Image (tube, rainbow, N blue to C red):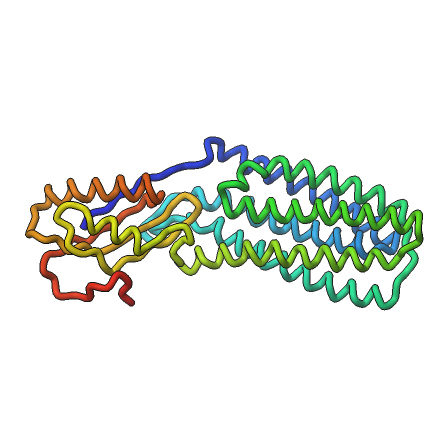
Length: 305
């Protein structure tokens, strides 16, 4: 059985990733405390809902921070993959919390819309500006890593949506201050919640696919099988599994029937060509091939184990 393990690491400075997460945690703790106090003093549901979202940001950032640290632990006899999926699990949890928080906000917004209350708009305006600056800095800190890491993307989305929520709260505060439109507070809360659901569902779906070992959307199994079938001495490729372990690793395992009873050295030459092909064309960096000759087994591309 042949196998290959090639890694494409996308982060040259993993310590910076952890440091940026830690700074973002401290910033959001400060924002949350300020918004809770300000929301209670002003009576603004939008400000309190933004504080609740910021609190979920703190939790999600802590989860992401811990997952980032855990994922670096080495493999062992009991944990042969190590903790490489810790960040995917963190992304799943964070996406789920986005949706839960959004549902709670919608319930509160509907209740407050039916009974609008006068709100101290000046406090809302100043605290929303503080939140915009704090979340904006956190977004900039995490943006680069969010492009290539699902865990960091989940933290980044929490912060980005909260920055946008704070912008909405600021607009609402200005409308309440100059036009006394207090119902705007509830409407903005409702809109913020819908946006959270939309963003959270997309990330929840992506992380679920990885946890369930689904084939990545960008990996065409039938095309890959057809191309490998054209390789020298290959008769049939079957019993294929392709899954994504984390952001850096895509695995492929398959059985290959050969036309001849080739030697191990001949198989190694063909295997090396297949590995290069899969890595450079499809970014598949873990390949495990079972060679066969006239073996009586199922020859379908997908075989239920």
